[in-house]
Length: 185
Image 1 (cartoon, rainbow, N blue to C red):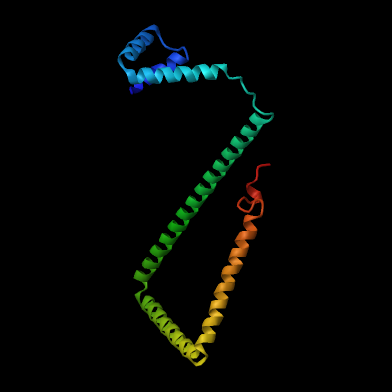
Image 2 (cartoon, rainbow, N blue to C red):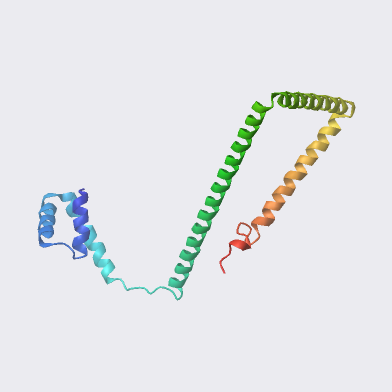
């Protein structure tokens, strides 16, 4: 099948071909049996569509489509502004973090003695946290380990159940993803 001639067939059915295009199409249809068969099918379909009665759209159809298009446009605008705001917020946060790191490095270069005191304090804190975790491990060993695991499992299960309940309740709420401040008045 030849795409340029299917386009010409479509134009011919709509009676929009020039005389030169119509002559070119007739010559091609005489030489190409595949396109000629397609042209016959298209003419039958066009005749059936021409005989079919025109159906009127239901009342309020156009208004409903316009309302849905307006709502979709509003959602796109909200998504655009929300995405833009999040991007700006991430950019500002990253710039602030880089500024803080730069200031900390600059301060550290200006005050090497204080940096060594801070680093040694951090090492002591990590050491103490490590001892605390070892002590907790010993305490769990003294307490029945199975009871500790059951309690932890129950805690995790209840947390998961409450999270699922919250998602179910919120998904059954009418506007759970669209806060009132986003609503158009």
